[in-house]
Image 1 (tube, one colour):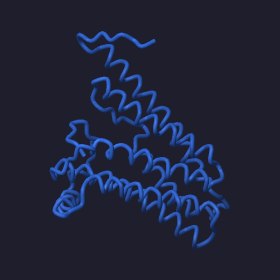
Image 2 (cartoon, one colour):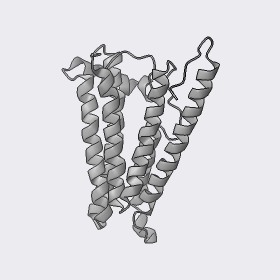
Image 3 (cartoon, rainbow, N blue to C red):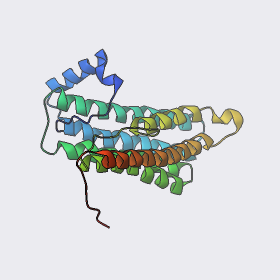
Image 4 (cartoon, rainbow, N blue to C red):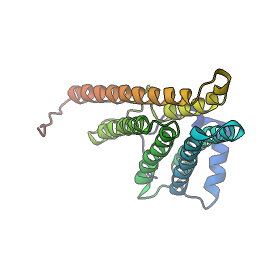
Length: 222
């Protein structure tokens, strides 16, 4: 991964446990890009668990939902440590920018589409994925226009994973009210709508920033 001033603000990056584990990883032969690749594996496992939980019952469903929640969080931990090993550990690479972004898009697809198919609403899973990717596209468009990266919510990456993790855990108790995948369906709707609002918010902030930038008059392409 490459040195980048536009890093996502994360409180966990400054905690003692994170710094200690990042130093341990840095001392090994593990590269930041490998950690980024591992995040796709974690997301794939989470997506498969969500997909399987939709048709499972009893103890198997409980185990799959807990696995989905766990691997959503492991995906986020990979996202945390690839940057820390790269920047704080000094292991940047020429292709780091690619591995910093591409696995995140694959991870969103695996988790959200997997959950959509699991609850029998693949269209909702794909819609949530498309809108999640749009939030990232809007952020990167801003950077391409010379603006700082905009990580604002309400449904940035960490918020999406928090929503899916909470939904997986809450879904465990659905049999108590004879529900079946209602929580996951609601979570995907929250992510879809929240991601749309996030993309619109970032787009508006970008347009305002570009219009107010001193000495910049860009010709439109339309």
